[in-house]
Image 1 (tube, rainbow, N blue to C red):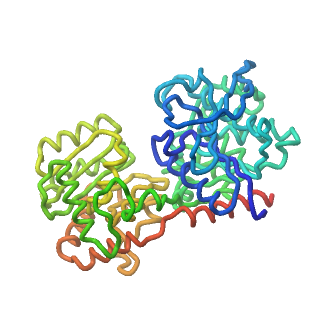
Image 2 (cartoon, one colour; image 1 turned 90 degrees about the vertical axis):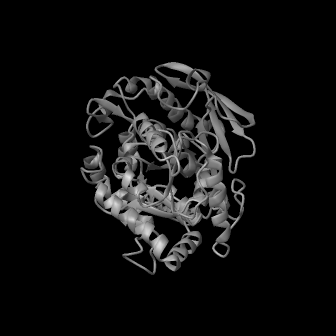
Image 3 (cartoon, rainbow, N blue to C red; image 1 turned 180 degrees about the vertical axis):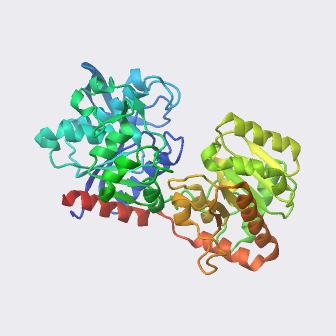
Length: 476
């Protein structure tokens, strides 16, 4: 493999410019790490209306969809950590938000074709195109079926990363015409998926290599339980399927330098973590008591195992703990936790919102972090909370299984508490173990906190694995 690679990184979300979840964090951090390691990376994303950043014009060119010429105006984000271009089209992207429009198929088809057209327009020929999630899946298909007939694109390899297999981007068969692809591709061996054109399947079938965001999830998606009806397709590509755990930015998530928290701390100064807890209690209107503070900071959806939390909530409160929640999502869970706050006003704080500053304060100020997911491709929350010395309680699945070791199973390497079965009873037992350790074994708890702060889930390790994967694709 070359010492320095040229990489095109395509994502529908890139932090901090457009974000709904972990995909944006990956797209904001992995390319930057690759640049720091000496590689040339160009990140492209849609030019959403809501992006708040100063930009400069780069170029423009036509993109043909459904036989119509659509203009793509390319702008570069000034001050970005690595070169980042937005692909702008008033018709598709000058709207509020990112997703949930009836023409999302066309909007992301534009992203796919415009990303490939951009390369020739700016004369940037990458060694590898790194495609992220369903939104960009057809890039692999277009590259293989159309663009590689052109000498400029001939030797470019593609990597397709599945961030969450559940969200697949299924659209009407007419997508073939929109992308100007032949009818012959609409077969089970191609893009057809239960009568629909699948963006996710396009990436899986046509990319040179595929990966997902943890080793355990890469194995799980080969089974009917986690495969979302694509396990057979993935089985056919098993030799090209890899698992690489995500990382987190140790610059953004650093309790010594975090501008959002009042008292900086590290493993040698844990009294300041306790001070951050008092500040958090004060801000949230909770009594400043030295009781275990349990936190939830993520989307409020069924996948996160919140039904188990709701089932056992009153028993959890009986353990004399405080509970803080920050997030948006399913109205059922939003309402349920707001009701718990009314029932337990001295123990519970619930904020139904997205608030990055408060999230950092909760990571730093709480003691126990809940993530009892039914499935979890990777999960970033458990790695972030460890960085702040907040101990995770998780279910053993996907990336949670790969990053969290139960201390009762391995006292020397343990960094949290985990359980296997998706049952409310097992969840409650695990919470009790964590609370009992906090109260009855202060020496063990302090060791857990220090171990978490010192753990390494930075992007450097993951970036090395991605470079190895790029190398495997380039060999072929």
